Amino acid sequence: MNLAEIGIPLEIAHEIGCLLFMEKDANAKGVASLMFVSASAAGYDPSTITYARLLFRQDEWGKKKRFKFLEKRFMDIVAQGKDCNALAVYGEKLFLDNKFTAAAPILEQALSVDDGIFEWRDMCLLYLAKSYARLGKVEEAKKTLKTLGDPNADAEVAPMLTAGGVVDKRQRLFSEGLRGRAQAFRELAEIEFENEARETDKDLKKEHHLWAMEWSKLADPNMKF
Image (cartoon, rainbow, N blue to C red; front, side):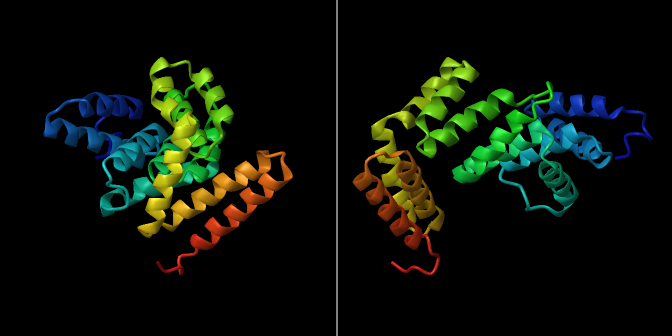
């Protein structure tokens, strides 16, 4: 659809898309998608970012040829590192893919380039707190939650911040690693490297380092169980 030919401003097309997508009717959602994709094709970044997030959430990213142009536009925006909303959406995606180490710096960057039109700022702070918690950075997670100031977010992240939560996380990662997800062993190694960096006791520091090296070896995709 050429929005210019039918006289619909890009911003209006985007707003129509947002409103229609909230409807339950499939036809309304179809028109919403058309509005987003058309506005994106015309260079309207908010539509590109919004629809990219929808594709992520619906597990449709990379699966349909008609969205290839929009997906490329989104990744180009992310690569530029200047759009806080694009970075927040990509950081959320990385977290949901269990790529916590990659998610945290992307979400941090999103906050650092906040241009005052940060639609997904609260989401960004929530997933940054979750990323910190998953990486064992408890104090950073608490500071981020304080900045967010949302009791619901506090309740959601709290279980990740307890000692038991850390143990549960390690057990979960170990189980995932045994099932063939090498990234789980990498995350275990990162936890131990973080612990090594914080530890002041010489012997404990050495122990954390040894564990980190062992987990790193297991992260080798050629390792067989």
